Image (cartoon, rainbow, N blue to C red; front, side, top):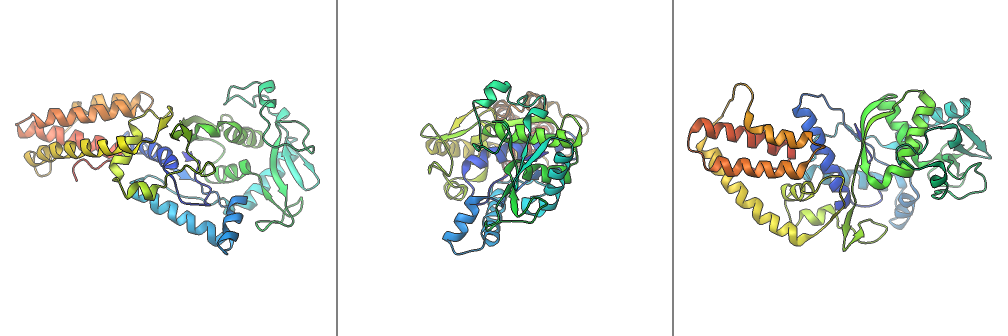
Length: 374
């Protein structure tokens, strides 16, 4: 699985955290089911915002992006996101991107105008399939306005930028890769022409994820490029989308100074991943109190069980929890069933029953990434 990671021009905010916590939970559950999970999260370190930020701090773009990439990985660890296998930095894959662009040109899916290269979306019959937008609807949502393009929905694969600070040599002159080819440069190199899950926020469906499909499938001829696309809803603050550009973001490091990682994880997982949700620190404070009471009950269950409970066979108590997770990763229902396990376990007195509840609570909380027994 690959999840779209950050553009490292600043510190991570809680909007990113919601998405990353959810996909960490997906990976945890797949691991529990017995799958071997390779989980990549790419780090975008090529962007004009990085150059602008570096200039403001009198740093090179490379040093600036490394600073915030390292901060991101540190914040991710503090959120108890543990399943990510690798953080590929897109700048390490420039030669791969150039080869991909050359391949798309050779196959008639891309064209050169001066030093710019565009993907010809009219050569992709099912372009718009992921977003369920018709060709006419797509033309009403052009992303790059330029007279150089043949069609409104065509997008940049390589951009001429001879004077840019971030620039590389290519067969079309000095320039830099477009946004979308950066991700396929990583994914086709690391995961091959097909993989199982690609995730990110819903706002990435078009144009980003639609463009990834067009690039990869046009180049390799393999379909589907990704078997399952999963998108999280938006996180809002005061009913406005949370983003750095809007100036209304709450940094993860700020949130963690007030609340524990388990509380933040539970808060985000209490909404279904596809739904939009509002960031509300008052509700987070109430959840903090509720979680403390839950931990007190769980502590008594563990104290009454065997020191190291070992259960043979299938633990039926966990079935309602896994049924919720099997239902499109219904984490709100899964959390309700974890709470029920704690409530029921607190009423038990037999050691064997306590062992079973202790086992099921431990596994469920580990899948959710929360520390119930700490």
